[in-house]
Length: 123
Image (cartoon, rainbow, N blue to C red; front, side, top):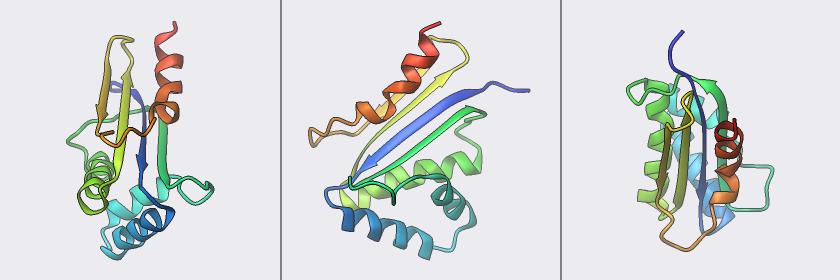
């Protein structure tokens, strides 16, 4: 069965146009795993310049290629557009919480990923 986690992340750009250009650029790479990750995110139904991702009860192992693709999105957004991101993974053990945060611009990104830590650590 394997160890399962709930995972969420948000990537925040300075402007919606940057977010949209980033998505277009990543799709242009024609990388199947990056395209799959892009298909799993939410970005076009908000007026905020953000990308969000949420997944429950998933095998989130850093060495899995599909997981690496999501981390590539976060890293590339930061490297290419100066975007900030917050990543949260909560494992089956309530004490197993991994938070990665690059919010150096003062954005309040916690509101986008906080619900999984509340849900998973409240039992």
